[in-house]
Every structure is written in C-alpha cells, then in structure tokens.
Image 1 (cartoon, rainbow, N blue to C red):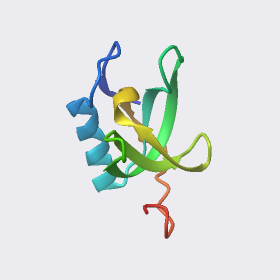
Image 2 (image 1 turned 60 degrees about the vertical axis):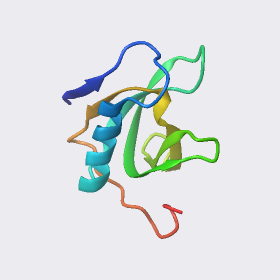
Image 3 (image 1 turned 120 degrees about the vertical axis):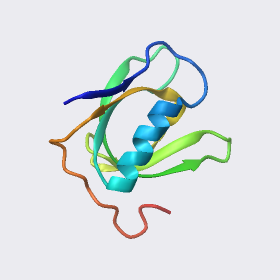
Image 4 (image 1 turned 90 degrees about the vertical axis):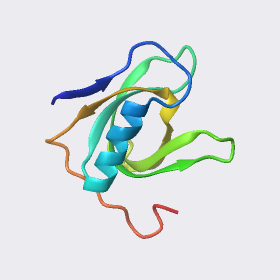
Length: 102
C-alpha cells in the first residue's frame, strides 16, 4: 500500500489532491483506502471504497459515492471529512450494479 495524499488536521472544504485521487480512481475503476472522520470529535477510521462518482448534495457538500468494502453496501462520504487517501492495489474494485449510481 503506498501513500498518495495525507492531510493532517481538519481544514474545511474539499482538498484538491484528495478530489483528484478519487477522480483518477473513478475513471480507472480502482478501489482505494481513505481516512475518514464521521463528525467533530469522532475518531478517524480507515475505510475501503470502490468509488463510482463525485456529486454535490442538496446542502452543497461534495460527496463521493461508491461501494464501501467494510459495510458491504453502496454509501456516500463527504469529501471535507476525508483526511487522506491511500492506494490499494490489492483491493478488488466492485462494479456498480444498475441503480447504484442514481
């Protein structure tokens, strides 16, 4: 596993390097690991994702939608809560099923 982008601290707003890493992995259909904090005061967790798309929520948050390997379901994550991304060459990409990207 090789480190691609690590961002320490909790800056607000999307981090371009992290957005770029998700975008590359979406285009190449490559899974990745990332560090995620659910909310203020919550611990940072290592997550595994097959990313499908980036989108903006109704509230204006940039989200990544994809298959969460830990929960075994399609989920979305707020980019501003991502604290860093890691390449995951040993993690198999799980393709979207019809309706997953809607």
